[in-house]
Image (cartoon, rainbow, N blue to C red):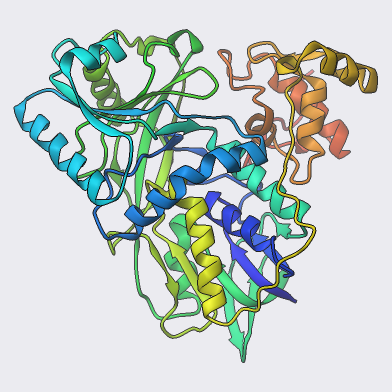
Length: 475
C-alpha cells in the first residue's frame, strides 16, 4: 500500500517523485515503457526557456518563470550538464521586428529578467554565421541547454535513493477506487495507493478517463529533428529561434551540451501518439527553416533524425488540478513546451496542492539531494588512476566516438535506476551517441548488458519490450 502512485516516469513525473521523496511517504512511480525517459523527455529540443513566449497569466508562464532559475542548483545536485547560452528570436523584416516588441513586452509582463532587443550589428557580432538578411533579435540571457534524458534519469535516481519505488513495463489497464484507496491494475499486478498523480504525457487523458469523467483531451503533436555531428556544433553560440507562428516556436537551431547541433522541430498534429516516424516532407521543412537562420549549416553531416511527441492539451495551457469528481486524483497533463523548464516548479506546486487537499507531509531528516556520476575520460588524471586501480575495465574503450569505457557502461547498468536496454545505456553514458551511431560499439554493449544482467545476448533489446536486435546465430 502506497501513499502516492505517480503514473509516468518522464521529467514531470520524475520531478514530482523527487520532491515527494523529501517526505516520510511511501511513493511508487509506474512507467509503461522498458525504461524511464522514453517519451517526450527523450525527444525534445533540450532547451531551458527564458519565459517570454508563454501567454500572460497562464500556468505555462508561471512555472516557466519559477522553474528556470531552479536549474543551476538542481543540475549541480544531480550532476547534470547545463549551460546558460542565452537565446535569440530572429527577425527578418519590419513586421517581425514589431512582433519582437510584443514578445519583449510579454516577457516583461511575465517578470522575465535579462531581455533586450538587439540590432542587426549586435546580432551578427554574437552569431557570425547568422543569415546576412536579419534585421534584429530579442536576446534572453537566462535561456539555456541541458541533457533532458540525463536530467530525468537523475531525478528518478534521486527519488529512488531517497526511498521511492518504481515499476517498469507497467501499463495501466484500469483504475478503481474503493473509499479512499485506488487500485491500479497493470500486467499481472495491482498497485494500491491513497493518491494518484497522473503524469502520463500523451496518454494522460486516457488515464484520467479510467476513473473520472472527461475534462480535457490530449492532442499529440509530432516534431522531427536533425542531430548533426560535432563538427557542426560550434556554428552557433546561442539558441536561435525564428519569430513564432501558430504551430509553435518554429524550427530552431541550437548547440547541445555535448557539442552537437540540433535542428527542428517540424510540427504536425496526429491521432496516433505512437507514430514517431520521420518523414521526408517534415524533415525538409525543418531543414529549410534552419538554413534560413544559418545558411552555412550542412545537413549532410546529420548523424541522426528522430521524432518526439508533444502532449498538447485542448485547454491551451498546462492542466494541473484535482479531478472534479475524483478526490485525491491529481492530473498533471498537457505538459508541452516549456514543460521541461517548468518541471521542477510544477513539482513544488503539486506538493503544495497535495498538502492543501489533505496529504500529511512530514519532512525527512535524512534526505540526500545529491546524485554523482562520472565519465572516465572527463575526469582529472588523479581520479582516473584511482578508478583504474579499483576497476581496470575503465581502461577499455568501448565507444570510440564518445570515448566511453567499459567501466562507464558497468556503472550505467548498476546504478539505482540502472540501464537494461541498449538505448538505456546510451541515455546514461552516451555509447552510440557519436558519429557512427553505435555501428562499432553496439554489439559490445549488448555483450556487456547480457553478461551483467545474466541473460542471453539475444534477450537484450534496443528499447521497447519486444525491440529485439538479435534472434539467432547465422553461422
